Image 1: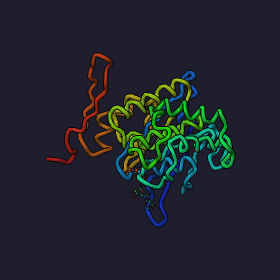
Image 2: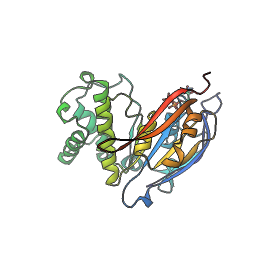
Image 3: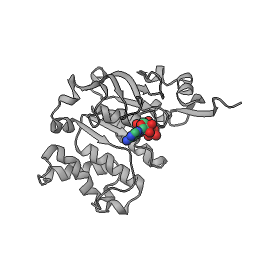
Image 4: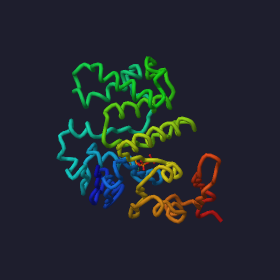
Length: 271
Ligand SMILES: Nc1ncnc2c1ncn2[C@@H]1O[C@H](COP(=O)(O)OP(=O)(O)OP(=O)(O)O)[C@@H](O)[C@H]1O
């Protein structure tokens, strides 16, 4: 899977650009059958969500373009594109019809079977499998207005996985989740990546980006983005500049594994 953004710029009408000349090439072909994970980090309002939407063709770039597997996203037939890509937008309360979670997840199959076709046995088996994978199989018959924000978020991840995509794009998937469910989602993602799935994830958790990613895009407000391999990109210096807080990064050995901790220790402009 190769995802490329070439000099992508986006400005809302009558506003200065949210981001300008963003370019990166996320090529997972070199990862030996494994997919790969690209994390996007940046302060509030830097344009991370807007970048995902433009990259996926949901908003038109003001200038520049994106490509998936060497073909401009704007040139892909929509159905074919959404068979390759699963997208989990940022969780927002409300706006869901009171479907059961299984019905919500099976909607992910519409890219495969067509919007008006009736899901068959294989589709429901896929629904069971992905709900099991994200730990919500027991909530199959629960309605969207009868579950917590975190449970709904897990269902949205399952819905995107039901597409059986080549590329999964997640906009802050951990934001509503407790410690255990954050780990569950990241664990599911890592296992799928080992089996060939490629992932782009917007996150507010630099430690998650450090633990998970193969590549990182830092998107500062109003400055040039930085793209590169994780260890070279997530540095104390880069994060301090990006967020305007003094950042310390430490590797902490635990009995289970070495954990990378990223801590904001003080405001960068504090006396
Ligand atoms: N419909 C809109 N019209 C005008 N400006 C908008 C609109 N939607 C978003 N913006 C602005 O675009 C900028 C980028 O928003 P975006 O949601 O992409 O940022 P973000 O980095 O994802 O933020 P966060 O981390 O808070 O989710 C923000 O300054 C926001 O106020």
